[in-house]
Image 1: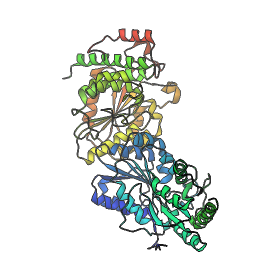
Image 2: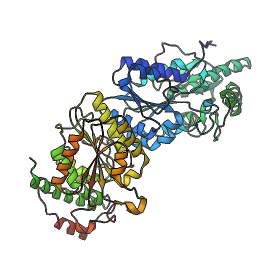
Image 3: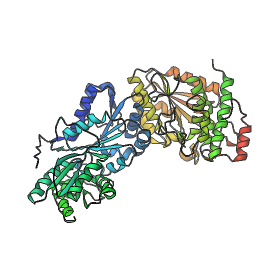
Image 4: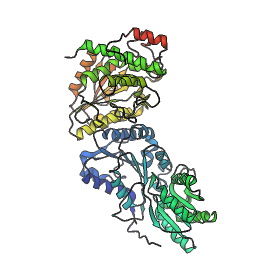
Length: 317
Length: 281
């Protein structure tokens, strides 16, 4: 079993900020727009170092999406930044018409996704955004798991021609993926090799999946852990290959089970290799105030929940 | 100096194109299209500094964005007659597999269209984004946009209007088609918006009135005045007073033809009032 070391907990949004700042230096076409959340999105460095390419739009997300779409006309690569809720649900029609249907090269970068936003509560804790965004034709959907991966993904999406939804979060979480990783959109990353159950996780649940695999090993269950940072396009081959070996699967995400990673995996498997599947996800509910750890515990989105789901999946084989 | 007579002849032809497009498929929006025929002809034939051919990025030329996408018949007619695609293609308006979708889109690659529009209220933000890109590119050209008056009931417009003046976007000329009508009735009855001039001025825009928005010479004069105000640190708005359905007597001064096609008899009447000039497609 591979050992993954937390090199020091960091927030994924800081990975975004660092990646954006690096792009500011390396790619003159990159511009950044923010709707009054520059500090929260960690866009300060880009703003300070490239003020002519930073656009403060105020609390006006719909206008921000339209501005970004317009800026692509003339060759800019706009990165918009606000919370996930305001990046998606609030501006869905703007994204649908002015970005996705119009085929514009806009990178919608969304922080504070999911329950781990914490104390602000359900108004801000969107658990539906992956579903909203993956349903848009042509939209790439990415949910990164740690600081290093978020930084690498931020840099990688600038080279992808087309709209991208990049989802990350607020809290400090384990940073364990390589700093020098080659981030490939749509390519799953196998973290643990196993034979009894496949655990496919995205975002903050990837570290929890690694923790779960350790516990499962002690219980005599060998878990294969796959980090699916890209939900669309989904690396179907990696998933199918793994379940052919393990015979059951658990999907884990900080999102509603309706419309999320789990359903994408379920569709893939039902069409190619029907497999017992358990969902670690929120159960069609809104969140609430609390600390991130309390919320992940209450809503069943941690390592313990993945262990239980894995045991259940194995029993269904 | 513009040849007004020649432009007016084209306007008449564009009216025929509008009527024939919507009649053929028994759907589409003739009223607002007819009301803006003079504007489109003036803009594409005289006002805009355009390059040959079509390049999405529009570097080194003026750009136009249509926000009220439902008046696609006039947009398509004038784009075709300005050389962006074959005029014959107007025959495919709203048909299956056509590039001339009910509402304009980039999705099918129709030359001349730079953004999808139809869901209202989004075009000004896009135009402002393009204007910002022009500034970043040191591309000293103007971005034009057109918006319905009813469309200004959408809140996103006011986010954009506020943004433009706060950021001194002075390479935009946004024209509002003030025809006073929307689907459910007059704009005053549906949701009265009060003084548009006062609103734009309060938001820091320079406001130009074109009282005769169906008069080519008046439009050219108004847009020229608007152009003279660009580059002075403020966005420019043109309030263009038009008559919905202009040029077809039974379609004028009513919202009834906002989204309704003429039948055979009505088409004949409308075409008789607008005799063929440079040739039907």
